[in-house]
Image (cartoon, rainbow, N blue to C red):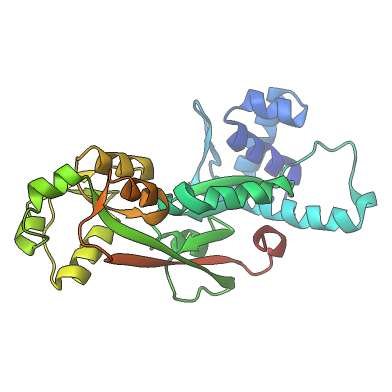
Length: 284
């Protein structure tokens, strides 16, 4: 049987970042926390916590922390129906749900959605960000309980529900368009105009060029790893990029941004996926 007092200590250290803060959360001494973690590590024969500032979990430690959170979710549901089982002497454990989404969803609609969820739930949330084509991998590896993804392929053991699509326009400042596209958007012109790219996983600019021009073009690019910097970089004339319509609609109406090719956009489908048994965490 697992020693859940030791698991709680590991989780608290990882969550708080130090043994001292974990001791405060658990209402015990730092030496008691250290002893519990050390005994569990010795029993398992692996290091669970990397001591540092802050303390972090090893891969094995992350698995144990996720297991502890999953148990906490089950216990929370159980105590709601059988409150007499809860020990009032035990320190309250706030369960943290691990979620994954892409940066553009987080920068547009996702934050409002999880904020509304948090108002009616005791769960805490830990949001990780990755490309929309890769967030499903977080779910497959058991690192999160739910993910926003563009991947259509089914994931075993998960519930899937459509969230619609996020529309992207290729936008730039009027001065940028006048400088690089005086005769319109052509393969030759786009090959000379600096694009904006989020990271190496970001293929939206290439996908739009292929859809619009019918061929692949090698794009010179600036690297800007945030949704806000994409819009700001476009407004400042740094380059052109695929920006969510939610963030550019006002700028386009005001003439601060223009579409490279009017009425030419990319719709990226968003799909919500969650592990099937965690209904409470996902239905909102």
